[in-house]
Length: 234
Image 1 (cartoon, rainbow, N blue to C red):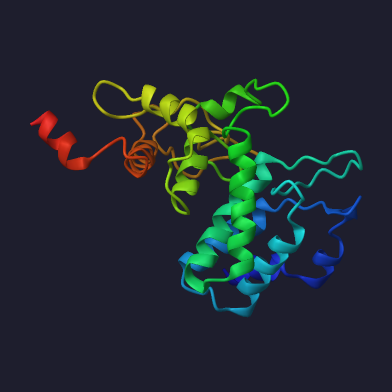
Image 2 (cartoon, one colour):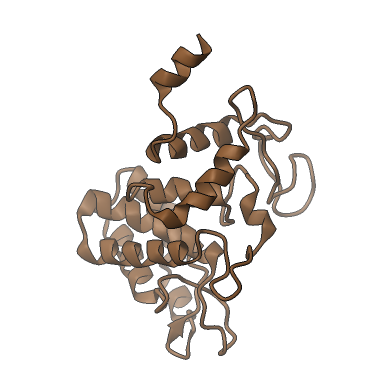
């Protein structure tokens, strides 16, 4: 945490965050992940962690998300750069009851819901087919399971705009009750270069973390009860 906070809050680094056409162009998934993990580590009251939350609120785009696209014509937030900041703000406001963090999280939630978590507002087509596949871990990437998991930490999963993503997640469950990984954002262990995993994480499946998170989401949506599931398999 010390290393990450020192890096993210270095004054010279912050001075280089460009503001173009009134929008801060920042890869805010970095601050978002750092904020969430710092809160989970119990240091939400650290002034540096509070500063991360303030920066995210200040950098939020009018549509509720964040983006690092420096093209002046870019005016739509990025799914990749919005999900982690949402997680960070959710964790932060839970501990601090900060009103600005909560309001920013609400705006980010609405950003995802307007897109039904994976569809274009203009064409209603899937924005990226990869987002409907299941991955673990995500790092700064995006898929519907990770989006549903983070949303479940903030509010009930009862908005009708979540229904299609929930249906899709439920349909991927295997007969044995588990889920398989369907894609990978980083390269397997042993490769050279960057973006190489340290662990296998269950690439051949079934994947323990994908299954755990899928069950968490379905339970939060009222679609799975552990007692009922245990009785059905007894």
